[in-house]
Length: 536
Image (cartoon, rainbow, N blue to C red; front, side, top):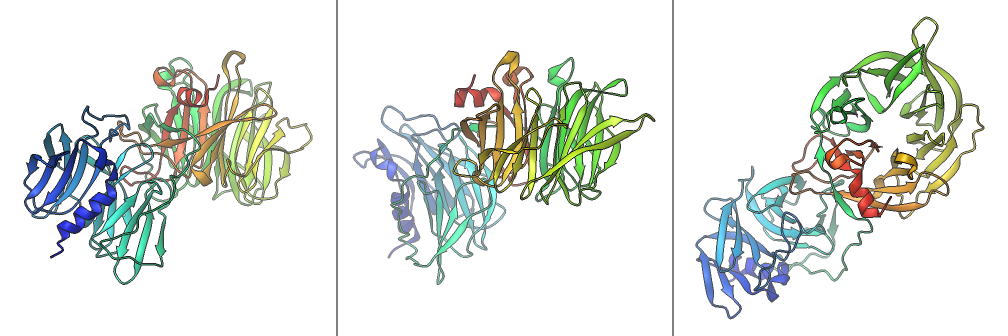
């Protein structure tokens, strides 16, 4: 009789090919899990009645991706579904001994499970629910945490993962074979293959491994999630404390609620419920009306207006004014200091218009936004940034590329294409920021390439050479997920101390994982980018 255990063993051989060269191997029978040496002699046994199981070689450490092979060869890791208790059990071989630990009990009945080794070397577990509610977990040394939820076919018990192609294969009886993308970030991907296969013999892949062109870095911190689900968090800005850099602030927009203020540990300190604001930017030491101000500006989409905020020396933020514009569907924005210390704001509209306003105190001591000039791109822009040292405005046209324009209000408007959408820069072109080099050092333009979940670094001066790119992956040690579909981002070259001694990058994360939840912002040291791309 062909039992479920025999089928599971056959699948395990398909999935755990790397263990064939190991000094030890695992075998499941009716009395439990066996640890065998190269001659097939039993070294240890875990007495457990298991319905399902899968295994992987531990040539890479599940938490860090570093090599952990023993002198006798790679060790083994397996996850078994306890048939009596209905919960997954994590088992590792350590020398000639098996070590077992219970994993958290899922909130649903598990029908199947399988393991996956991702390109970072991290180990993942897929738990298939009998009603189609399934989850992807991250395995660490002796525990696991949910990464994300996913919808699979109901009533399936057999699965396999093609690590090279990064697909989870699930057979749905009488329907066919489903392939689900295993990449945690981004929107869930799945497709139905027309050629169904028997449940016990899911087809293996002959495809080559997926190319990863850019280095994968890890976030050092993340903010508290925003208080709204869906597409909510959007754009950050960084305020540098004038005396104590460790007390600096990160401002971030929640498009469904208002403006958030975080510290450098990512803790939420303030929420200003000012409505549907999309993009935010700030500048410090603005001179107007005979005074100096630290000011932030955001686009308010319900009112097609600019919301002006003042930032106190303590880092406390308060609303100062609402400044109307004549835009019909206001969207993105950036601000910049003029050479004489005044503030210009550059909001844009979904119809392609970009305007330039001078934000200032008038003779009556009231805040106003005075229109200086305007120009129009062919399609929708959003992200933009002013490189103040060069008085150059960069604007991202979402479907076409990055433009450069003279930022001086009295200069002619002659947009120049810095980088078109293509192989490296993939639509949508979203957040833009400038890393201002210290002591005359080089400055760089940072861009969010939303279409391939990556970030590009270009010289901020002509000819705007591409220096490279990077992605942000899972930081298993700190339990921080990677990033994808980033909208807004910001970078500062200020010395914030510690890992941020060379500067700080803040990016919006379009899909919060580990576990699933409302969106947030991730922090990354600039030094990691400089090291990975060999920047000065």
